[in-house]
Structures are given as C-alpha cells and as structure tokens.
Image 1 (tube, one colour):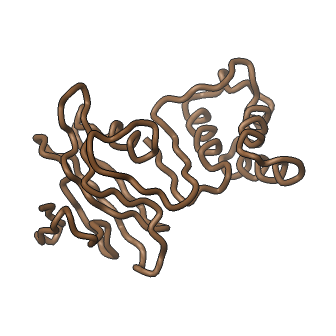
Image 2 (image 1 turned 180 degrees about the vertical axis):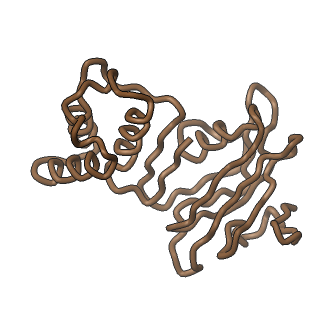
Length: 193
C-alpha cells in the first residue's frame, strides 16, 4: 500500500488515483530514502492523460520503483522528489515511452511532450530552423507551422535569439529551447526531467 500526506494508505492495485484534488505525497519505491510523488490534482471530471498500474522500474538490475499505480489528469502538476540514484529519471523515461518497465503498464491518453535532462540539437543550427524541422516531422506544415513555431519562440523568450545557433545558447536558453521543442504539437502531457 502507498501512504498519502494525510497518513491514509491506498492500495496500489486500486483505481483510486494517488494524485487528488488536495496536495498528495506518495512514496512509490522501496528504496531508502524513498522517491516521492508530490502533486496538486485536478477535478475528477478532467481526463486522465497518464495512468500507471503495477509499475516497476529497474536500474542496473536494482528495483527502484516497485508496483506503483497512479493517475495523472489534465492540468495536474506532479513532481518527483528523491535522492540521487533513486530512479527519478528512469521512471520518467518509462512514463515518457523512452524505456520499458520491468513490470506493469503505462497508458497515455493523448500526445506527449518529453524533455529529458540532456538533449541534443544539430550544431550550427538556429532555434527557428530546428523548430521548423521538428514541426515538419510532427506533420505541422505551412502557415500553421509558422504560427506555432513563432508563438513558441515568443512564449519561451527566444524570439530575439531565433536566428542564433543553438550550440551558442546559454544554459538557460537551451532549457527554454527544449521546452519549446517539447511543446510542439500541443501535447496533453508534458514530462520534464
């Protein structure tokens, strides 16, 4: 069973989400110290965009997440807190579809945006050119592509640097570019590591 911040246990096999309308804190590993999910949930009428059931994750043969079940709904804000090596990134990779779980299942209800800790871009390529290229790969073309890419560059405060090579960006600019890239296609769920 998992324990919420109010001290109540929740059966891991139940359909009751661990992310609720009030602040919930849930231990999801057997490690010491455990990894914690902290989230503020949405009203129940909003659609589930991610559901994990009986999820187990291994890193190097070591079980870091054991039998976790939880639901994330539209507009939920969820964070993972844990020590270095607790398996946070490994769990996010499984949730994002970049790795397979050791056991259990993950169901995603809609488009997914995923921003890993580290990501690459073609050297000597501008943010504008790269976002246009990635938009085309997602099937976004023409005037819609132009509008979406320009809006993302403005929203991430990269408009003035849109012609600058990404490899010349500062660390913060690279992170904002990664957010713009992850938001292409208007995903229902954004996973940021």
